[in-house]
Length: 263
Image (cartoon, rainbow, N blue to C red):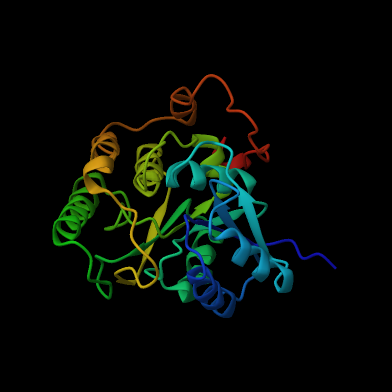
């Protein structure tokens, strides 16, 4: 009997190779709610693919999926959310930085009514261990100023490890096309719409598996764009929707209807 997932876990991957096995072992062990796990890769020859298929043979909830929206983590996350079958989507990384034990807790917050649930490094009980110093300082400053001045609901708007109401994401759309700024974009949009955002403390560990593909210089302009966007008057869903591209992208996965509470 097929179990309808309560959570779609979206993991963008890029040449993770055998390291994906360790990552998946942790997630499969810690996620207790009915789930599907989407390993989103940009090209068939990605070194992650053979190992992902091997895992999927014994764990049917694991789905390797080929991203057709264009290369890069933002496009992979966009594609994964469009392909998700659950009402809650959790985005996490394949590098061992995030704590998979918190996936269920983040998802339950969304089920209780928030549209974004953030794993926060910067709230009491949270911690960031390792990582480039400049990146840490900028991320902490952005999170704390947004929390203080926009009342966005989390002190860690830039962290990618978040759970989302899938219908909310499909309603507001994702405009990011480059790096990992989607978490900030969706948090900023929720704030401008005055929709509820919540957070739980997390301990983030610098990448444990493989090599980092984060390029601060390349991604910084996109982060600044959404940081500035978070400041402003309240918007309606119609105003947010007008920002979306006029034409649908090729080979897009059809989205389910938007929940009435977000219309």
